[in-house]
Image (cartoon, rainbow, N blue to C red; front, side):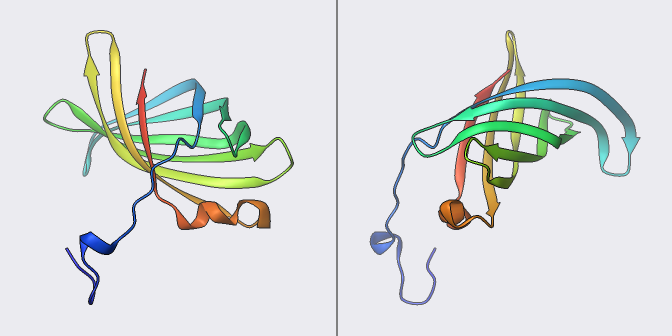
Length: 134
């Protein structure tokens, strides 16, 4: 894939650990046999995140609008409000794919951020990859 004169050979890609997130999950509201398939709306009660450049809590409003798929996997559509320990508020949205395993679930997501606080505007320019389990 290329855009104009750019090729994959001259596009820099940097990978760094952004942090670890732990969520507390609340109630689930199933909506079965809808026009997009069966869904489960999951209330995220809260949680924490911590990394080299970020640390704080996940607070309401936060939730996951899951779509169950015919192949046994599920599509994630998550919105979370991050409150950093130094007072910034950041919106994190992510979408991805999960699948059940014998011991829980494996989850892979792509995350984007909306930060207005000047200390965290660098998040607006990145796409983060999430690897998780339940």
